[in-house]
Image (cartoon, rainbow, N blue to C red):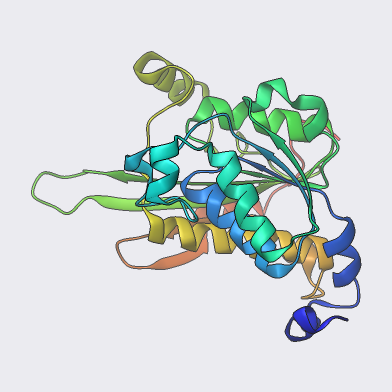
Length: 261
């Protein structure tokens, strides 16, 4: 094992093979996706499919890791910034950059071994999960929100990491995606949705998602069959814990009726 990976040897004998061969898809390269890409590159992953059609703006600098004032001046694509970040750590990495909406890149994404979804909007999440499920690819979704719940009380910061796997519940099973919320979102914002993004909760959620993926890929805990697949983040108290719905789901049949396998 290389010196770069010596301190990651606890992840098991499969680690070098995973890092060299695993094709990782990251969809959305803003607040959450930029941190996912950064961590993957630091760990040593060397094969990527990156998808984002957007350019960086000044309002993105408070959350997009790797972006600079010069990138804003040059109207750089978020994709270019992500590729640059990977290259500084893994210069020989194999990177397929797709400056399009993920819906236009379905065939390329179906080649991935795992997909991280870092998107705004329930509609986009729903479509990306469907794509991943159709190709039997583990899909890991991250997202956060800030809501003013009660007048006079501080806003509530919350987030989630959900792993959607064949043979396990999907985001509809968990109630995270439902037709009522999809219709409400579409009426208000169209397909994109609007959610606040803040760098520190995105960091917590991205790190949690990376941990879920590494256990799925290397089984380093030896208990991957018991791995939690739905975490909730409470930014007001600083906790990440299994979602209550997931705990209840464990007591029932975990097979997904929406995507039979």
